[in-house]
Length: 344
Image (cartoon, rainbow, N blue to C red; front, side, top):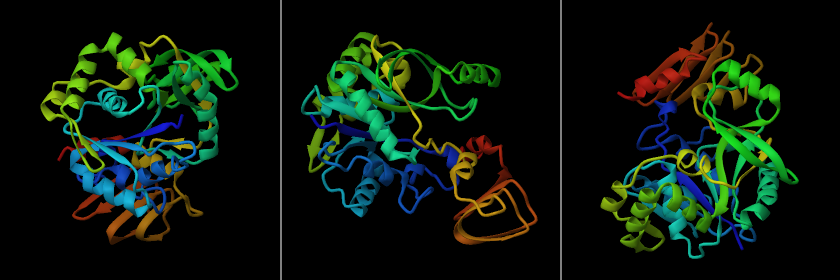
């Protein structure tokens, strides 16, 4: 049975302000390649011998943007499931599970704003997880850590179930630095990358046990959904009544049979301007530049110019982002401060 890709595209991307805005969040921007991260995500699941046409879960306000970006890469068989309001990932995935024609269909749930530099490793992990998924396990992809990162959740794995796949022992909240170092040293923890694989019926069954109000609201929203062309519009009032929660809290941490495939696939959630500098191409002075940028005696900077030219001299380790009438300047390492400015 083909895997149905469920691509979550409803995020606001405020951590990459002023380039990412509510009108054009980061997943719809070409930040890491010539194509946007949304388009790159869709490209990973274009093999129709393995994957069914994708189901795109997006904000209704972005419908035209999604359609345009799909057309740009020649995808004309996607279905758009357009949320009337944001209710976090668990309800969004519930809508997608209810939209599938075959309840036993495996769903590959992916955020649309992540980078995977090694798609072959991602495909190998998918193949390793699929047999357990067909048996009714919920599965996730564990990112092999490159260091004691405190900005990610972790997954502790236990018994080996089959080659390359372990049972999950527990999910761990974002740790402090000493705890992260301890987990890395133990060798049995991976980062939680937020990518999942499971059957639609199994996901809905776990919701029925652990989040019945969420399931009921999603079912009501889909029962009264409007459908035309390739779009599904869940009933707005019913979905607005849905509790808001992430898939990690509502489902994965509570389910009985959860598997993880540790994988090194060049993953990044591009969660900040600092992370974009980390994964971006650099000149011999360690500068990452995008757009019309002139440098003189500068090193270690990330400079992004959209619409105007930015010229810098004699500066080190800065983040400079110019977009329209907004300019952001701050030291590298302080990019989480962007959230404060993005609020207005």
